[in-house]
Length: 202
Image 1 (cartoon, rainbow, N blue to C red):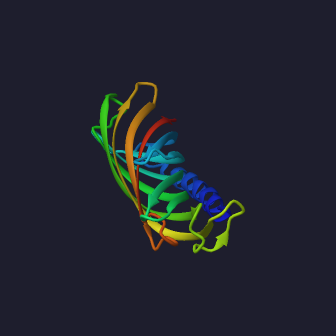
Image 2: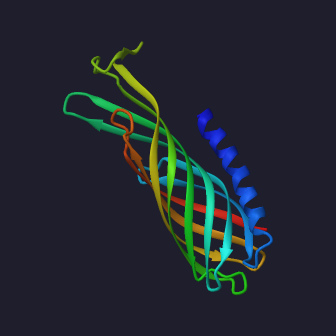
């Protein structure tokens, strides 16, 4: 967890320095911040926060950003003999490149989002059963549990639709899909989410 916050802070500094480097060029560059809430397909809560800058390409824009995602996901299963509950907490630091189609500050309105990026993923996974004692650590009320905390690499595919207002504010409905390479235990290696985010471009 501490690794992710250090990476996020370092990334924000690099993003700011990169934006300053573009400031003297003829290509317009707009700094932005955004945040929002969402959920995965099982109803688990997800949230996100990030900073980015967009390079105006006329009728579209290229957006480079650093994002911190978080989410908590729970799944209950039964093998015919015992009930099991799996809980996965994810914290994802990612560098994401989005292509904003039909995005122009001169003509606010509907636009589309398509993007991809790389990520560092902190995974906290726990499996427990109130009756199965073979998982590992015995529970006081009966049953047992096992848990794994790990840091893994991953990737993000992002698709969405948004609306740009005249004051620099935009709202987006996005589907960031997080792929985890070599997640611990039986934790999910693919986490699709649906998020509603708001952003402001300075």
